[in-house]
Image 1: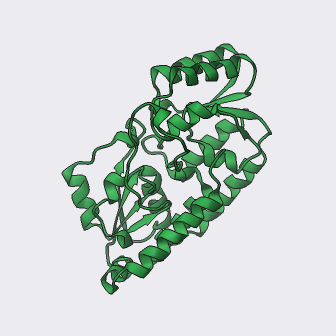
Image 2 (image 1 turned 135 degrees about the horizontal axis):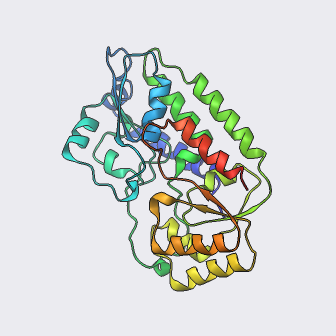
Length: 293
């Protein structure tokens, strides 16, 4: 079952309140450093958040840098350079997804300096067989949660003089309406990248639970999980397969091949935007692909 947005936002609110109560006056000042700056600098973990910041701060003197750009890198296993971390430490503020996904960027920074969609937890996934995991992890692909992206856009605007999130939020609202119009089809995912999009639509998430638990924990699914997935495909248990080409493995390629042989719709949704692709276009492309089902 896809973790509900209510639970995620509740966790985020609790984390925010805890941070607020614990922060000193200096931390509160850190959260407002971009206000009044002539040339505020913003560092984002990936171009999803960097492009969002660019859109919101268009027409201002803000300078935005994304650490990961393009879709040739798997952010799950990214190691930043010393120069990357120096940019983050020197920035007016940082934008990240949170939830451990891009902890390599925000660990060591004052929490008040980081705009984030999920709580700023450490990256603690162990890459071993999923038998040691007995519960779902938080889905870190929060940039596909259109409500969360809208909230991050507004917070960026709140920190930069002259910034405006209205147009971006309107675009996101239109995309959410398109999700609501999708069919009641059964979909499985080689990686749970589209959970938030599926949750906002009539689509039914149908990935076998063993496989799903393993991929949420960034572990290798067991042979039995693969066999269950292939049986689901061959028995006609799903209508489409969501495939992340950016994190492809021999196992996911085998699943895709079985789905293609069965004549299922393959919905490609990448981890991050292609070079030069902005966030709204990236999200639009994902929804365009889902509309092929």
